[in-house]
Length: 283
Image (cartoon, rainbow, N blue to C red):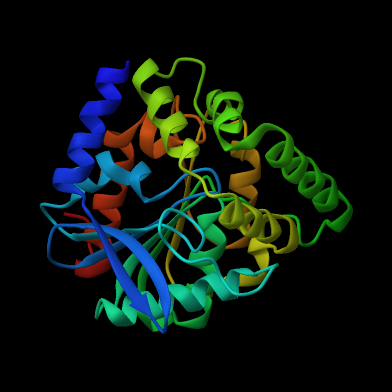
């Protein structure tokens, strides 16, 4: 199993390498591959840019694939506020796309990354040709009592267990029962790279904001979810799709970390989104 992870890390370094940018004094890390129309990938709370490796390799022959380490993740500087909202993450994303000279993109948000993606699309709809939400997390902003319980538990687990043990304990919940051992190992490795300050800010986002605040009426949107997702279950994702007036599709057999567990399927869905958004028709 270590050999499989080492192979992915070698691919990561050679084919989906990291870049560091300075955005108004804030360090921002991204991974990038390919050329052409841009597709921008935003990871969830327990992951990072590297989690998109297999999807990026599947798309880089047809597009410029950009994945960020969200503020406070990897080598990216945290946001300046203690309890950021999706608009704060979206402002950093806007600065990043400005620096990369990306005027328009397909924007993909997985899990908690869906909040940033939707907030950005609402604020700058002219820059998003298609919004794709994969297993979107709604957040608890409209349910403050439940949000406080989740916040307290996550912060307690972080303080008492630490990142390495969190990764060990939680990674199996992000994949289906039939996931390969290599997929589970890659989920675990990505979660083990978390930084406590960035993770704390992401907990505040999860527990204090609400995806439904950011429905972008001017942007085409689509929602996908693994049929075996126990984190953001299919029924919840279907309800979010309805609220966004967006088509909904299951990824059969996948758990929450669908881009790792079923990269070929996710790559195919995103390739289709690229074709639709930039040509107006599916090729």
